[in-house]
Amino acid sequence: MAKETMSLDEKLDISLKALELSDAGDHEGYIRLMKTTPMPPFLAKVMKEKVGVDYLINSGWNLSEAEAEFGADWLSR
Image 1 (cartoon, rainbow, N blue to C red):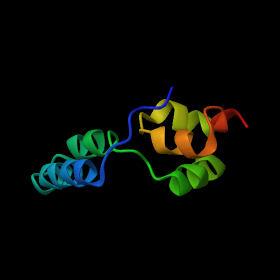
Image 2 (cartoon, one colour):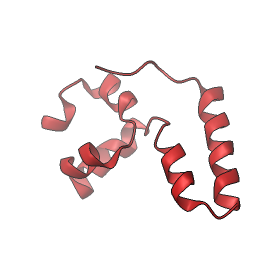
Image 3 (cartoon, rainbow, N blue to C red):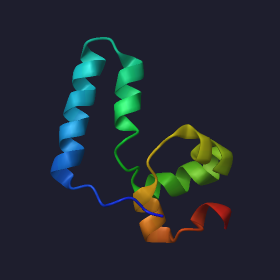
């Protein structure tokens, strides 16, 4: 099931907080926080082709926008 759509303002707020973590030297915190924002569908599609379905499933990235655009079964097609 797809997650609720995140607004641009919410994405920007999370990105700014993540950048603060990165600037403070917390790269893991940066990645962890960035994974909460939806990966753009075009990027998710490229990642599926380049690194594979297993990576996307196990990576923890938010794929809700890709699911909304391509359908719930897009990873298995």
